Amino acid sequence: MAVSEHTADVSHAMITTPVATADWLVVSPIIITILGGVICLMMRKQTKIQPRIAIATLGLLMLSNFGLLARVMDKGVITMVMGQWLPPYGIAFTVDATGAMLALIASIVAFATALYGVGDSDAASRRYGFYPFLMLLMTGVSGTFLTGDIFNLYVWFEVLLISSFGLLILGSDKAQLDGAVKYGILNLIATTLFLIATGYLYGLVGTLNMADIPRSVAALPNHAPITTVAMLYLLAFAMKAAAFPVNFWLPASYHTPRIAVAGVFAGLLTKVGIYALMRTMVMLLPVHHALLAHVLAVVAVATMISGALGAMAQSDLRRALGYLVISSIGSMLAGIAVSTALSLTGTILYAIHSIIVMTGLYFVTGMAGRMSGTFALRELGGLYGKSPLLALAFIILAMSFSGLPPTSGFWAKVLLVDASLKSDWPWLAGSILVAGFLTTIALARIGLYAFWRGGPEGTPDGTAFAYAENADMTAPDVTAAYTGMWLALGLLVGLSLFIGLAPDGLVAIAKTGAAGLVDPSGYIGSVFGGTGGHP
Image (cartoon, rainbow, N blue to C red; front, side, top):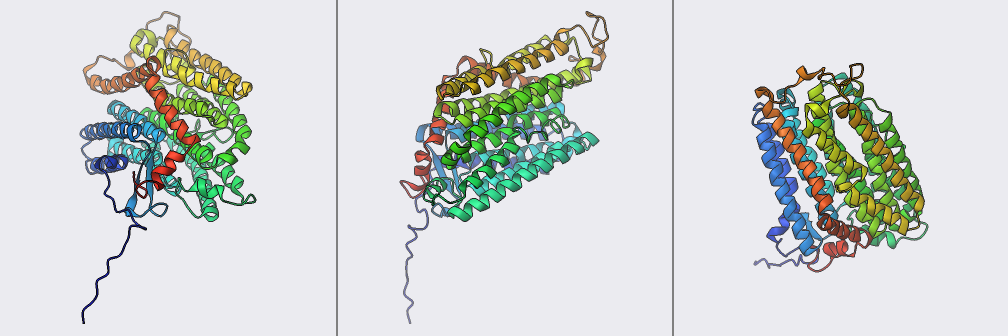
């Protein structure tokens, strides 16, 4: 008896069109970093080879992200759905200008960290996972910026959280373990709140796809408790971003690990929280964001001012920088609170600037500590005479952080102040300017103590460097280590200056990204329109 053959029509359930070759750039950052991490782990005993593998891998990651950004700017939002299932059932990677730009800047900073780590990481830290953990961290960061599924946003947060634990305790000093406990507990609480909010949201709308959530939320009845979900997301991501008053974990932990680790943490981890706030509060829950906007603005001002005052009060360079990270987060929160296309442009630009400059300031601090043997301001002095080039790098980065021309920070603060004034929030604009003035004082204090005075506290001004024997920058045994550090620092300082002198291209990308957050029709169309979910 013959068996009849039936051909199933899967076109209504699955994607049948082939994926364009160039669209594989969407997932290439995940593939590159996982493979790079695996290779570094396999070569864990070859501690001299690991940096070369990591630098080459992260260089390839930069090229991949540059290509992805170019394609997004040319074609618009790009979506790739896993397993060929049509969205919202298939897990989607959806990349817009905001995600692609932040992924590129993150890869540049990770590349600089790998270079800096040549001198900052010893054989033991490489053996126990410095470079594999760095790769895993970039897997989580890249996934966060590129995912189009809110549950997978949680998953990528977990990936970067696990890797950050490993990086934080490399060395196993008592201070590191103490900092890791504080860092871990607060971040795990934030992650738990994130998961609870996501489960609650799924119970209400029945979808986790970020393109599907805005449409589903709009169709809910007025009595649906979406405001509760918005408040949970706000609290969770505010903790991740180190916003006031749930920011005490950051200055308690960021001064404990190696400078390369602290630098990449300061540059990237809090900005992931800011990105998640923009994506959830502005794009997914705009109506409920409007209800919480003034609360967010007050939090922004408190974060800016408390961070600046905290930096002024510190006598340790690393602790001072931790409070400056907090202050910078306040400026970005201000842009999210206003939530216009102009303010979000400023927030995106400020996030890019902060990623570069905060990492650079930590690198300067690390090199200053190596030259002097200490991070205590009272024991520092005369570094300008020791290394004028390092002093120049500090001045440029300090000017950029304070928002002074011709650096990257100037344009970001101009946009944020302009957006606040145009939205009739003059007190918020004034707070941004006051916080900028206070951070200028904090950085000027560091510069005067560490670089300009003749020597450490208690020595006559003009005395030859009391600690000159601690580090000879020209000694053959340290030249190779310092070469990587100088290259990393030069890359970040040069990038900040380039953005300040030629901001038009980056501002245009930030405008495109901000417009997509305010009006996500292009994002939604990429997922559901045209060819069944794939552009």
